[in-house]
Length: 212
Image 1 (tube, rainbow, N blue to C red):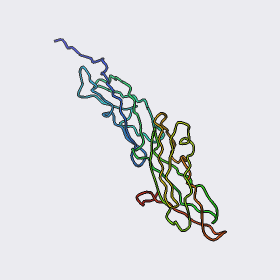
Image 2: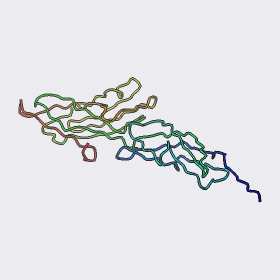
Image 3: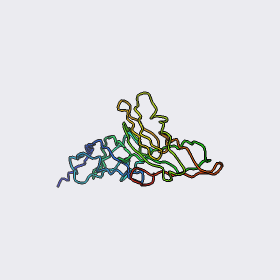
Image 4: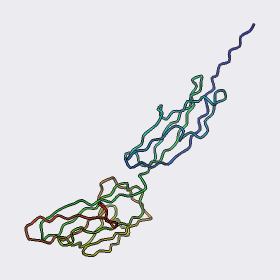
């Protein structure tokens, strides 16, 4: 009798697709090999392919990786042959820009500038938000002025301000902006009233009455 041994030496065909993901509220997102795979196959063991991303069962992306990231998908068949392909994982922040204003205090009789900071500000070409001061008997809003990236020549920055409320509209469709979490986009100028020499605390809430 003659024994014929068939040896598989042909690598699988790995097929990739590019994807776009958003980080969750905790600032991370998980990608599985199946998210990248676009029909990888093998001539002998197509149903037994082991898929991996960068040699792992999954990859975790966070805010440090916003933008385009190249990953390698490998497909290994039952004989140990390996095929690979590359894909782009485009990582986006969560779809809601977060606007923050701190609780702050200053000497009565002075005007102070309260920074407005942002989170999840990635390739943004427009934003609208507003708020009001909680204790209007001790603080009067004077103005809101843009700062940094939002103060560029191509930007349009407009405000509607009363002594107790402010609304801001900004857009720049020609040059969308990306900022790091915690970057300042504007300052609320507030005049503090009260007994001269006393520290006056102020607090802001958003349009819906929620905390910034």
